[in-house]
Image (cartoon, rainbow, N blue to C red; front, side, top):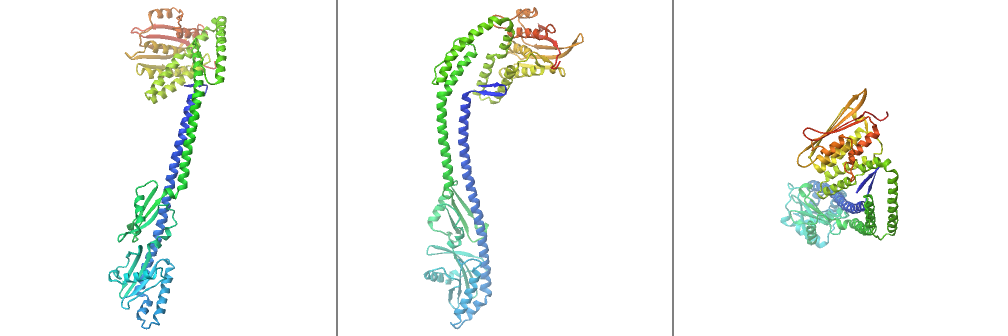
Amino acid sequence: MVLKIGSNPSRSINHYSKVLFIILFSILLINIIVSFLTISITRQQSIDYITSTVNLYLKDTQRKLNAIDHFMIWTVKHDPLIEKIEEAQDMSVLPGTMKDFRLRVNDFQYSTGKEYQFFLALKKENYFFNSSPIKLSYSEYLDIKDIFLSEKMSLNNYENLYNWQSLRLNNKFYLYHLLEYENRVFISMIAVDDLLKPLKDINLGKNGGIIMENAEHGYLADSGKVKLLNSDKFNDFFSSHLVFEEGITSLPFSLHVSVDHFSAFERVVFAQFTLILATAIISLILFMILLYIRNNVIYPIQKFSENLSDINQNKETIDFKNSSIMELEQANTHFKGLIKEIKDLKVNIYEQEFEKKQIQMDFMKLQIKPHFYLNCLTTIYSMAQMEMYNEIQKMALSTSKYFRFLLQTNENFVKLEKELDHIDDYLAIQKIGHGSAFVFKPFREPDIEKAKIPPLVLQTFIENSIKHSVSLDEEIRISIDMNYTDIDNKRFITIIIEDTGPGFPPDVLEKLQSNHILTTETGNHIGINNVIQRLRLSYGEEFTIEFSNGLDGGAIIVLIIPYLIFGE
């Protein structure tokens, strides 16, 4: 229930309890959404950071491999130190020449890193020695020597320059570049673990890792890492699998990066889920409190409000039910005595001022119309059950305008424009209930709406036409024409209201034309009688009202009133 009192809307306690529940649910839902968005954004930022870091690493690695390729090409073909090693006949000369060559290679390593190892082999002399500080055990060194001096490894001649390959030695993978020119075989080699060492500081989580792959050996890692990599491919939210393809990076290998987001950002995820859980618990507690308040406070207050509503409807018997709230029990007791006093007071007022206040009371009866108000609420409730939300909005807006005009109209005169707007609001409400059962056609001369008129005069006649003429059998037309009329050099307004209904009953029309009072003991026809009396109080004898039926049926009302505007 929504009441408009002035500009401040009043709503039931039940409404505010529902609003509070919606707010609690919305807070929980928003918290969950924000938490998942935070996790998703953190995950995406992690992926972007890892992608950028790996791309920088790949560019740097490509630069180093290119530098090594060019260094090896020039060295194997032009380096005079290799020529001196080949020409050395005396073993006393050979160590010094080899030392100079190693210094030459060592200087180059400052631009690439010590992890890249170099070996030189001379086939005729059957020499094989390391050209850089060695990072292998002696047994591994001998295995390397046997591998690279075998015929099957001497495949890269000077014309096949850029070809890095992989080999496996003692369950450890290496990348190597072997370049053969005439008698010379120059080799560069690096362990895969050393090559990936710049990426070890990236936070990939507990189960994350980086694996290198090439066409020769597939994954260059142990089976445990490969198995973990393949298992993480199927978990899209808590892990990511990034692939940097060989064809895109222009490197002799591809990189597979597995990111375990859950363990990498475990604290963030735990904090978010803790916040969601805390919000859910708080919402549940507040919901239980709200439920308790509803059963022990709101429900008794609603019952108390129903009692007051019964009083408002002038019921003779009021049942003040017991509640668990002491204050309401006390209020019930006080109201019982208050009702009796009010009834006694009403009797005294009616006896003392009946004739003086009769017209005002009739007017108030016209304004209040509790049954019309309740019918509007019942209609809105029925439309809500059928989910007619657009119709509910129109009905609620028109009803609020209609009753705002009734409740706020305390003046003896209103602008004709406001009276016509009030009629539009009333007809909008009736349209929802009757549909296309009637058509309303107004006509007014320019500026005539500035005139002032007693409130609810025209609306009463329009309401009477709707009540007695509209049916589902045929469409009823209701029209209202407003024109200027000059009588004895004085301006009047002629208002003609017509409908195509059955017209006035003969007995009623006879009383209207004879200026007899229509009000009966049951209160029927109070509206027309009220209008006539208020017109007489407002204009004295300077108005004319005529009632008739058309030749083809339908009621006709002709009202002539002085043309007055506010300020005169």
